[in-house]
Amino acid sequence: MAKDEPQPVIAVRDLRMRYGTKDVLDGVTFDVHAGEVVVLLGPNGAGKTTTIEILEGFRNRSAGDVEVLGVDPQVASEEWRARIGLVLQSWRDHARWTPRMLLHHLGEYYEPYSTELRPRPRDVEKLIVEVGLTEQANQKIRTLSGGQRRRLDVAVGIVGYPELVFFDEPTAGLDPHARREFHDMVHRLADYENTTIVLTTHDLDEAEKLADRILILAGGRIVADGSADALAREVAKDSQVTWTAGGQRHVHATADSTEFVRQLFADGGKDVTDLEVRRASLEDTYMEMVRKYETAPHRGDIDDAALVDAGKELS
Ligand SMILES: Nc1ncnc2c1ncn2[C@@H]1O[C@H](COP(=O)(O)OP(=O)(O)O)[C@@H](O)[C@H]1O
Ligand SMILES: [Mg+2]
Image (cartoon, rainbow, N blue to C red):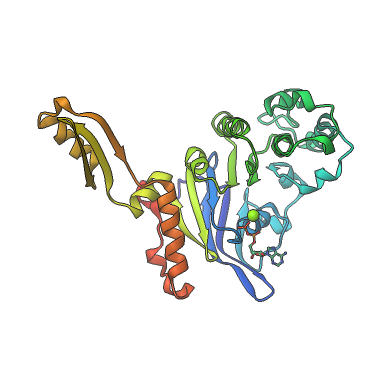
């Protein structure tokens, strides 16, 4: 890392996690920088939740170095904890409480950690409106629908005005409208409050929409690290250009679609209509990366140099 680069918010080096005799994380290395939205992708059982819980300080790792906000989560203080947004499962035990009561109650915990830049806790009444729980604010938590509970999860995660927030599958089971509202919230948190956000999802469109950077976890390793565009370029060098001219549909695959289209118009493209350029989607990329891992006879056969590090080409 260059000297003038700011310290990463999260630094993970050669992280390993073994459950019994099973190595779930087998040398995971990545950084996350302030204000980044990083989406962690990977098949079921890849170790995404394990990774997040280690970063949150809820799970002790087997080996490797981890720093979150400059501190090892395994020995972190309450003050450190107050700077991080977590969604604990345990608030669901407060079934007889209402969202308003719970948020006020949890908010109190953050009061001693209030700073000028981040007044803690957040204004609970505003928060309730923001996450769309106005009508349910005084309803017993146990009577909330699945989607409403998810909204409350998000509110719980950000009530302390965190610098860094973790969301593990935040939009699973949300309807399209609630999902869109969550996306807007993520953008607000990142753009206006410079919040660093790490989230997991199985929705690749969502990943593409939200992520500044995507990490793909497979076989206990990070097999891809880069923007959605950079990953797609890595996997599929060619884009597909389609257009209509002279009443005919044309298709052409090219590595340099911009130059191709320039030429197309230069060569008298006046009657070109319905022009479309399609690059490999994140889904194509994801499938390819995970397939590559899965078809390797054993992990040792994927050599480090072959791992996609599309982020490099950007810096
Ligand atoms: N406490 C645990 N004890 C034993 N195995 C576990 C434990 N937690 C998770 N695992 C196993 O570790 C693997 C990764 O789990 P997890 O981190 O939940 O994956 P993901 O979130 O990517 O689906 C799975 O095979 C899971 O069964
Ligand atoms: Mg999980």
